[in-house]
Image (cartoon, rainbow, N blue to C red; front, side, top):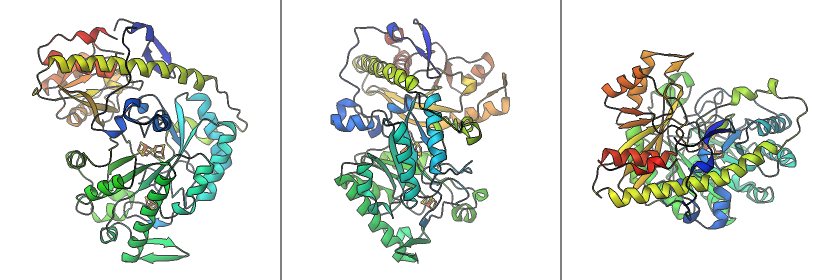
Length: 495
Ligand code: CLF
Ligand code: SF4
């Protein structure tokens, strides 16, 4: 890298003046992943809603953080993949919620996080129960937070059963992002997922329960869309139960106006104590998930960067800083100081423009020089955020995976792993697991890597490159691709 490196919001980034002033663009182009769309792909009022939301915009997830507060423990349905002792499986990986919070405590925590995490842009309520059923606490929390933090986006996740009762309140409260978990549109299939619901003051089981849940979910979706609230539909992919059916779900939610569809793999293990965990129901493999996502192309736009986060997650997607903000570390009195978030937002506004421009330039060069039928490559990137290659190989607990071909670079997914380097030393057994995680990957781009892991990776057919440290991801991936194709990697000079 040729430019200076500065630290902003905890990120090591290149100073913007290292980039060519000549690069100007109207925005990034559309791609197969709907959440990858940019300002050129949607109406300005929609872009204004999603541009800083890390779940609704793949680009935003490089820059902005969400936090969840676990204020809503009650739920009105039972999903066979959920055990209430654990986070809501709609929106989280299994793991106990560290603390359930009162609305007052949650509001204090949000302010404390906002003072320390400049990337924070969204407050979500996503369990451990249902935010719309436990509505009194959800509403009280949001009301307390916006008194001090009026610019934070409010976001909820719900199973939809109670949602129709509160849709108009959402508008009054400026909540313009709702996630509905919809696992079926055929109630017969629902009977294998939901043993009961609690509705209209009674517990209902069997087909009747699924029928009511389905109707209320569709009603929720229609009411939210009618009011201009952006709806993301989450679906849990359960092999043998709803996997093939999710294609129909995808078409239906697109028809009804959902903004995004997020198909998540079932996470199921006996120790979670769920029905599926105990009866041996497996989750899908990564290949099965990708096959389904590919089959959905042309339907509702897909989100592919979900991290199935905890109901008390804090930070950029892919990192969890929750343990830094447990209530024993939050002061009794806390006053919001906007200075860090304001400075960060200003920096991001310029940075993302320049990254888009650099990515467009790299893409144009690739399109102009690489043969149309050239093979695609998968490239893994170690990043701490900011859209840059800025993490050491040994520190990465996940790799972002990009596909590159003659049409350009696309984010496809992330792959998790344990970090190879602990306390300054690499662990061989962990490296083996990392290599397994990276099956099918051609190249790893990271900020730094030692000789030993580099050699082991090479033996497994994966080239590790640190020459693009702190560069933009897209320009570096493009440069690597052109080099693979025997072409000069000109844009490697950009950043
Ligand atoms: Fe939270 Fe969900 Fe809002 Fe995001 S998460 S309530 S929309 S702020 Fe995001 Fe986490 Fe995936 Fe959810 S990565 S689990 S999609
Ligand atoms: Fe669990 Fe969420 Fe399903 Fe309720 S909606 S049972 S909290 S996964």
